[in-house]
Image 1 (cartoon, one colour):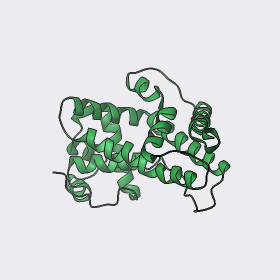
Image 2 (cartoon, one colour):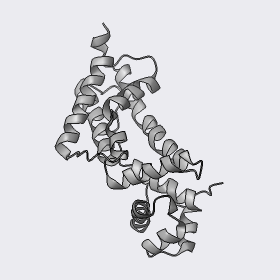
Image 3 (cartoon, helix red, strand yellow):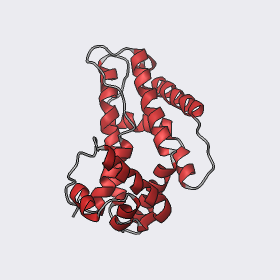
Image 4 (tube, helix red, strand yellow):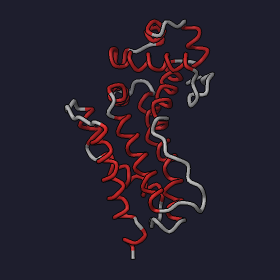
Length: 212
């Protein structure tokens, strides 16, 4: 059972961020073999401190995934003040952040390990990535989608289904190609273009005017 981490993973201290970055580096070099010992050595940190902050390996991995996923943010929406331009900006922001995160070498390494552990039914990283990655991101964006519906800008029955549609439009085959070693390059200009395309296509499907 995973012990409760002793820090707020959404607001780690600078020293804790160094540990989380070291964890990601170790994932790139050690894969599934990453341990509390190897992270402690890489981060020049005592194992006692790691256990105090994170509880155990699962706690450390959970904090690492949460910290990585926290970079996929979306601006707050003020009730009653959302217009089409603001909605498009939020959708594009979310897509840009997600594409930037998942195309990083550390994110690719983390997800490869999660898939490997899940396939071997070893460890809990697959479940950790799902809960603190994909599912947490849904909870982050669905209020924006619901606000768009409340403002008469979007039309859909179920916010989870609407999120999955947008997720599919922004993800397409990008992540699987990266995970399988495709030398797909995503410079900022391409990421901005892909984010704008996803938002545009989503509005074509779920924009209120498209439903009339």
